[in-house]
Length: 185
Image 1 (cartoon, rainbow, N blue to C red):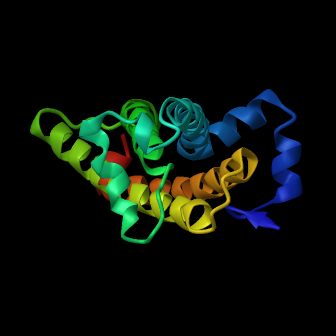
Image 2 (cartoon, rainbow, N blue to C red):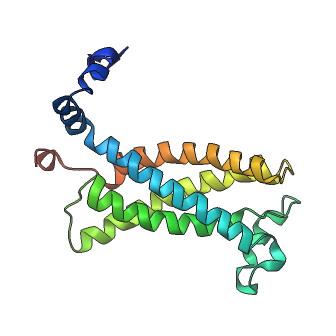
């Protein structure tokens, strides 16, 4: 099997040396850092989801001003207990993700109004993947009626994998896209 024109065995062999690891990191820096900070974002998402699920286990536990969130799913004949915790965990995780992706992973050098535009594109793309996340959780948990913690956590892991891949593609091609002259920096 070849990866970037190199045989897998050759790559693994080169990782045994310090110089080989440096070369591998240099060639794959962005994806390596995206995976590391993506894991951090995922951890924040999962832990905050579990925390908010404990804090808001059902519609009765939610402050009145957030009750509208539960109304979103009543049209389907179900009460969703996953939307609010999912939404709150999304906010926590994506603030972390924007900062780490912008500064460390994609090393954006945009300033001023361009940072605001970058943030708007970032959060717009993440709103799209939030909708995907909510849809997956709604289909796998709420519509099935299976409210077992381990099943729900497994559904969240599956949803997170789908969202992670979509987020990288959108960040790379839409949000932090570099002009040709910037790539040489």
